[in-house]
Length: 373
Image (cartoon, rainbow, N blue to C red; front, side):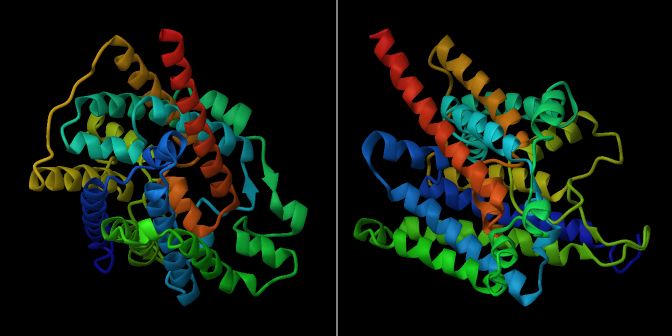
């Protein structure tokens, strides 16, 4: 590699790890959890954690919009905003991920946080999530994903003449070209207004700080991958390149496929073509950040399964999350924060499906309790 770019792999993965350490530490401290946010509403009518998540979304949208407006990154080079949207994959994958994360007591990011804090149940979930995700990327589960789900697409290029599927591009194709510039900030402002309409939440300084920091970490991920790690002309291929990303495109944080790539790296460690990527560094950083915060706050504790049904729920849940997260092109972070920050239409679909799956699983669990009683 040319000396001018030889330092970039270590720089990109180092920054990805450092930002994820912040993510993991803060998320553990404020109990940031998408599943918890949804179930708090379904079970208790408590919107505080949901408002924290929405604040993170608003921050990510505004920050990502600012990066794009300044020319620091080109969001069309992410895999979220393509004109052809595999909508069935988003819906089916999102629903299965949402259902699975409820069975296994947390989404991919929460699983990493709990592993870092000593939860052995989450370690089992992580193993099954990684295996299932890898099978969905390159193994047996890839067959139904690729041949039955991914082929069903909504082509916004053919329908509207839109080059991308983000909401700004769709608005421009419908005759509002200026929307690309102001829409991210308008959406972020509307979400922030909803968040702070609650006096109870507005008084929760910890949750406010948590939402802001986590949203900014997503923005930082885009900057590291899409600006710091962008090479306009790779000396080896003379083509543009995003350094150390598994997709070959600009990325920010997601925690399903990267867990599978971490498993692959560990299994094929002596294969020098397998390297630490942005996504893998993010996974490791999340665990490290959660561990550091758990030790600092004396909340680190070992936790195991209660009974056989508990084991089964977590194994099935982890497997569903692995398949669903890869199929939907992201998890509650990969789609629910990173994808949403681009205002991609597919990310909106996937996020809605994840929430529906979570609510459905909550209803299923209540039904199981009633039957057992």
